[in-house]
Image (cartoon, rainbow, N blue to C red; front, side):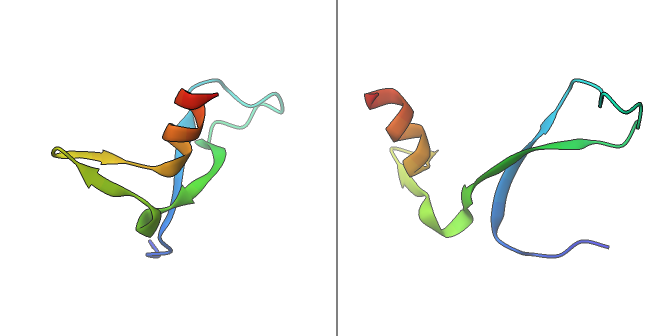
Length: 53
């Protein structure tokens, strides 16, 4: 079952230290509605924060 929450996240490639084999989330990255398209590319405010830091 999938839910359309609008949350953005990423999957981690590294296995869990406890030995489970299910996919792990890297954490909350933001909301879908916060991004904008600039010259055909999807840009999220968090990406801009990293590039100016």
